[in-house]
Length: 244
Image 1 (cartoon, rainbow, N blue to C red):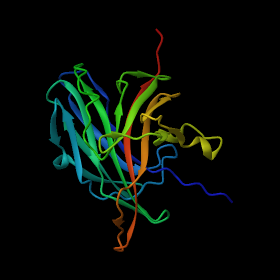
Image 2: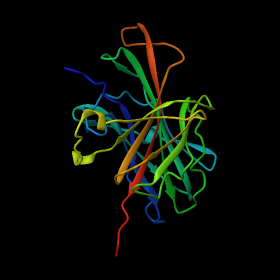
Image 3: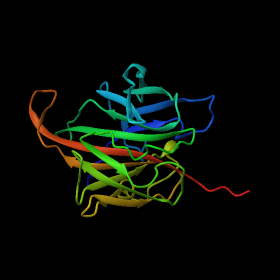
């Protein structure tokens, strides 16, 4: 029987990606490590090393807002952000490295999502400065179903030609059934300038994960030096057009 490697995704989903009400500016974030399309299995997360937001060129530390919870018996987290000023909030996480025994490697997925607050529409393309990062070339909110998402993959600030990008739909409620395993994770490659493009065929959240080998080995829980998988992830939401 052929076995396929399941794509791990660091989930960082806000309660909303667009805030228009001046009286309701508290955004809550679901933080977990799982397989989005299949909605599991969930994996135990260690406490993230960094959780923050970049807005107007300033960083906000959100570690104090982090709260643990259980998802399918596994460790996960939730976090809240009080958006006090208009702007685009680039929320990001650096997770604790995860030991994947089945693949004999450590996994570190640097992840971000953008929340638009009160229509300022400034800062959505600002890089956080993570080791691996997806920088959007399309405003990553206010997207219709079928829109194309374009972005550039960077490693230490430089474009990554031919980078491999895995794409998964956050299949909440498992409403979408995959006819074959190959449909679970879409795979695309960046062009020679590190740029990729993908058209999202269904409303909801889509995760883009640029996967790169780590520059250096890392110790696993047993103290053995092992390979490292680095990921630069970004979450983007699409919405269906409604007719009157």
